[in-house]
Length: 356
Image 1 (tube, one colour):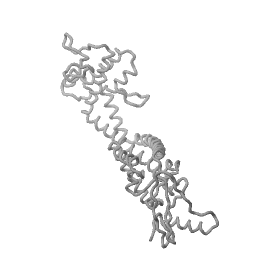
Image 2 (cartoon, rainbow, N blue to C red):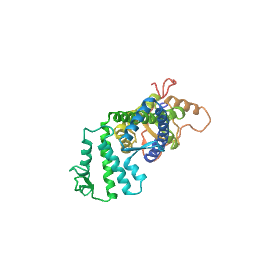
Image 3 (spheres, rainbow, N blue to C red):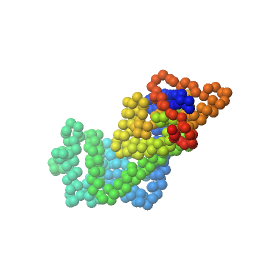
Image 4 (cartoon, rainbow, N blue to C red):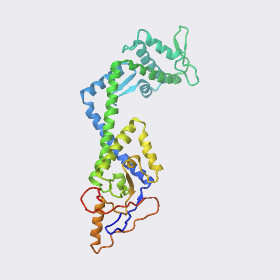
């Protein structure tokens, strides 16, 4: 930048190192994740007491238990699939097989939820055992064969037969979707958790650590706690702190695109921004590139909120007998190019704004 006498003054900042930047990101991610997890459980406790959620949960549990494909574990307040329950309850393989056969037979043949027409359920279960598309071992052989009475009978030891019942249980659970009450209850529970509680918990936690803490404590450089550990700061192309509105726009893009949208697109926006950090020489992530923001190391150098502030501090320093205000801040390695900033003709208070 130039002073009032036309002398060019360069402020040079070292680019934020990639590895330290990743560690700073990890610090923030751990903090955000920890708070989000705590908020999720707190919000879930509140939601579970609402009538609509409680009604859906009771319906889901009752249908699942009535189907005999699940066991409700009161001590854990959780539904357990019958194959998992058998493994944890019975030590003898014959007991496990007997329990699973009884439960699956009841689901298909007795049809407690009226899911099948006539003897459809019995035929489906029979087809699992001996049908051409039935459940087979890894070598393609069957677990069952017809006996003299024409009924399926196991032809493998009980220890091997357990694998059949594990697959048969999964197949049977798919038929629960024929129950309208089960489907509606599951939809309410799933949407509440996946589209309300989880996003809300992450959004609130992310807002605290990525927006409120910088706004309240680290406005000179818009640092998060992770960035503050390594003395990293955010600057714009004029080598001063970005204006508040640009920092907020940057935060909103990070929240809605790189965080929430990534949850629905298998992390695609997040992969793009991480890739840009690695490939680009200036280390700009996607959100920084879009808003003209750079992340720099500022441990040994002052950060200025505006050009006006810099020239005001320079004038104050030159009017004292203290050591010179300006020093050299050059380092080895990649640096953000010096930016030329013209001194304001009229100094007015404003955040990062200059008038020429």
